Length: 237
Image 1 (cartoon, rainbow, N blue to C red):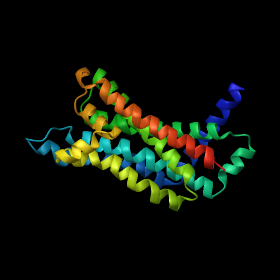
Image 2: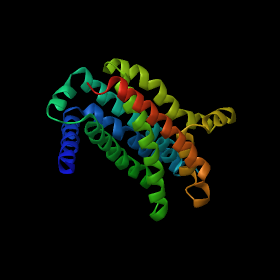
Image 3: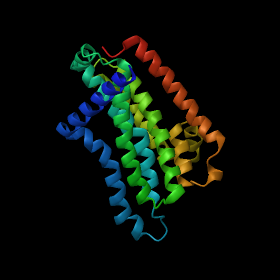
Image 4: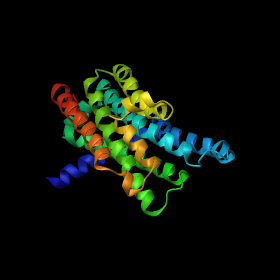
């Protein structure tokens, strides 16, 4: 039984990779922000004496964790619901949970690769690089849960886009605004992306406090509950 489940998950994962090779728009979402971070770092940060070299790596990494996985997975699920691809998968004995694990692992792995790029641009090495990657993946997983829930709630891709973009913009860009405005920073502290921003700015062990992980955990738990509700109401059919 476990072997069958693994084969189904692997089949969904491989299917999504093939779909990405056919649809370059999905791939662009994963590479756009790392490319922007490289360009801004090389053309601006390294030419400004008063600006840290990792300034744009940190800024775009937070945006990446909050925006890309949420928008991508909601788009994938809603599109395949609209095109009735999921019904064919179910007829092939692929369970909804297996489908979600396959799609979710695809999004998380590609986001992990992008996170590695941010880590290298930011100059993280050794243990700091691993901590950076772990922090980023906690944000990616949280965003993936919310994006999957939105995809399930949506009747079609247009509805999913209308729902996900405002939430993704808040999660991604509010920490950037908070860097320049104390009032926004106070409001943003309840968001997982704000805590990610704090920790990747200062990856020292003293910065990785229980309070910050608790806030991320609460965000994740809330999104998981929303996902379960969406799953029960809409399922994947």
